[in-house]
Length: 97
Length: 97
Length: 97
Length: 97
Image (cartoon, rainbow over all chains, first blue to last red; front, side):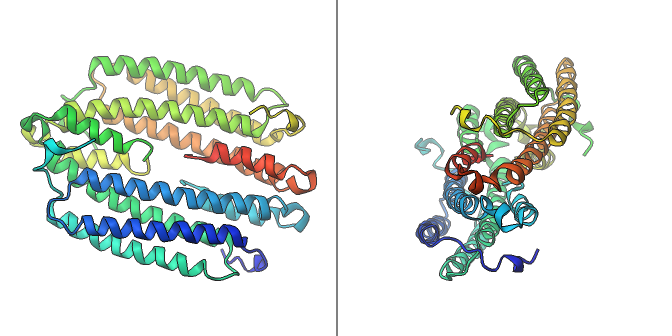
């Protein structure tokens, strides 16, 4: 699964910055759950709700990166000549998303 | 969605500790993605793979907490007399999991 | 995974009827997609949309049956004395839902 | 959401045939669940397992069609000049997959 042949493909800078910004917020959210879990009184469903919220926020980052990948790298794959490789690689990561 | 009437129900201590342990690892994983995103060379699909891995780790924490909740709180709901409330609350959080 | 020890637990009649009603509609929806696929002009994304709609409808049936199972069988498990078995079995089917 | 501007894009014949074959099997599976639900003795978790199996089979059809769409239509979008439209449309259907 080495992606060496695509060493020139890069996440575009604006998406990279936006993903970073969102992941910083996600880290904060995870730290919030860690603080919740320090309390002996924490209720299961309140933890489940927070986990679900973090999953939703990660979905958004994933969608952001996926959208950029599709526009910049997948949509140009035929010209570049790596359609099979780039689609196989993407399908692998989309499974059970 | 105040869960005031269930103020006595608590995540059991062992599950709480295990969830904390796993979330510490998840925080580390998120920080790893943040470091990846500092590089101009980062490739979209490598980010998507890491996001997917964190999602999988969060699923595991969720399953841990859910299993404990089912065993300790849902399985005793009929005796306690709050079946409707506890099941409605749980279904809300299980939707689109 | 034999559920022999739970031979007395049954899906309640109203939920069973509602699930049947919805699955008849889902069968019709699948047949609609089959008809779409007979046309040479069918467009990929239109098929994906229909598959997604059927998945959503199946989610609803699953939620219906799950809610009934939680209320009638899981919430009474402690009294019946089969908490471990019923929760393990349920967690198995909830994974990667 | 009219896809009129893409009236020339079509699901490729081999994928269409394979999708049809799988959906025929899925219809049979749904009919199997309908027969299960005719029995008064049917157990909730057995229904949930069958629904999950059908969902898995639908995922496979979706992956098949998605893979074909990516290879044939998305990977050529830049040459055709409809990158924005085809990616926006695809992201819409991938959400909450």
